Image (cartoon, rainbow, N blue to C red; front, side, top):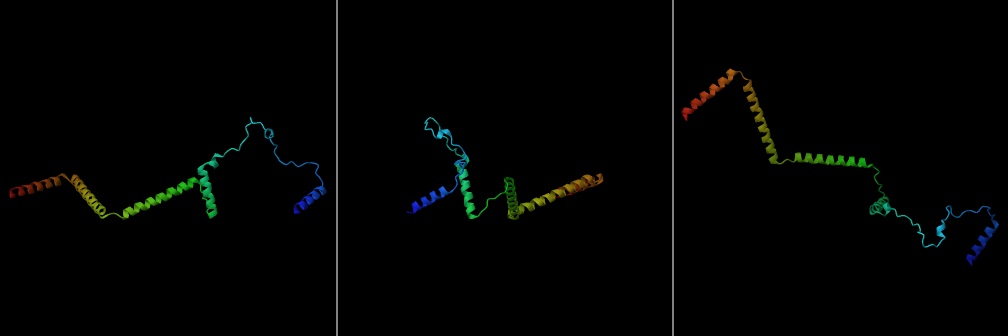
Length: 160
């Protein structure tokens, strides 16, 4: 009964409204001719598959973005170059920290080796200085040194 009342109201409203002289087109684009034909030889157009949307990587990325949006996490909008530079800086800082820790945590053996190396370097420097002094010394000082050595060797030889 309610369905009939609606129809009668609609028909009454249509009759009372003035009709437009220009008909309103139902669709903006014209329908192609081949849709009406039932010709089996024609190839019907199909919607093309977007290879980006069908790829697994795109689907995973889209799913991750949707999950982040639901959680309230915004994606990082940093350029790729800035990300790379930040990563390099972070790696460099970590490398520096590791080197500092390695220097602080030297073993006892390394400490002893460093001490011996320093002593050897000092001895070499002293020997070089002595040689330079001897080379720069006058001739009579060299002869005097040689005489002392020969006298000492001569006195030590008969004793033994």
